[in-house]
Length: 349
Image 1 (cartoon, one colour):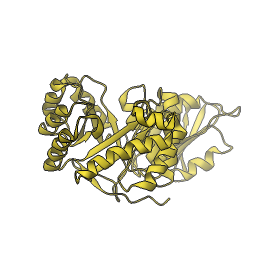
Image 2 (cartoon, rainbow, N blue to C red):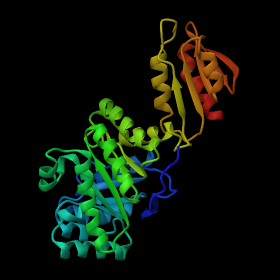
Image 3 (cartoon, rainbow, N blue to C red):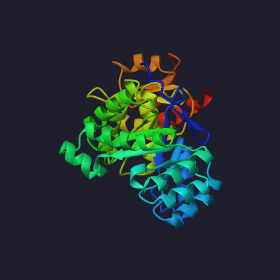
Image 4 (cartoon, rainbow, N blue to C red):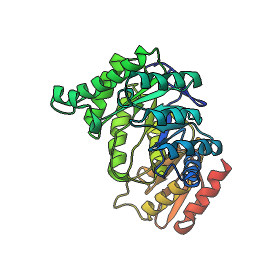
């Protein structure tokens, strides 16, 4: 695939756009005013590969809390601001790495100018975030419904405000809970601007449905070369957002490090509890950074072939499994010992 080269912006020590890697973001669901809880969650997110974190800033107490949060974490922090320009100014003062605002919603031009000048002085970018659930009344009246054209017009309106103030360190997100609207919106905005795009399906749902919708929406656009940073929105543990996001990037070849995990769906020929084994192996390898392919296969039909193609894997039999390494059978193991023996061999790689 050929990736569109967009304008490059800097968020803390992370670049977004241009030839930079596609970053994975998440958003804390703790009360930002609770510094300890928020820091604890961010540190856990760092461990599973979160590149950039966003925190809600509902009031001045939360804006003040950012100062102590930032001191204790290691990834860039984005302040999520709605309506109150003073919260944006205080967040900038307290050291955030980026803002998520819609300029048209934080007051008159003088107030917007104050925020823009503060951001310029600190060298921090602004992400414009348009959602299908929060379109302006005049745009909704014009189009009579939420549609890609309406979402893009809203985003461009906010972009033009920043451009009128000579501010160009902009990232844009146009999220919808409707997957096709989301895809079409990003395709349309990608043709109109060269700013980096933050991809996501908003309010995607639970771990099961949200993963499917996000994978289709985000994955489709990335496969077309559209997108510079992503966030998977799930009604679930925020750690899952990052792990799903990284898996999407890994499946498209944007992330090279980490386990490439394959397993067969099982069938009537399977004579070991492959589902249990596959889940356990995947869980234990979730944080493994080794760039290897692991195959968990259930029988002798496709199993040996797939296992030989992998760096390491198993092919199941009747209560036993063959462990393959680099195409060679290295041992035959009883079913109850398969996971432990496989993990020992992975450690040696």
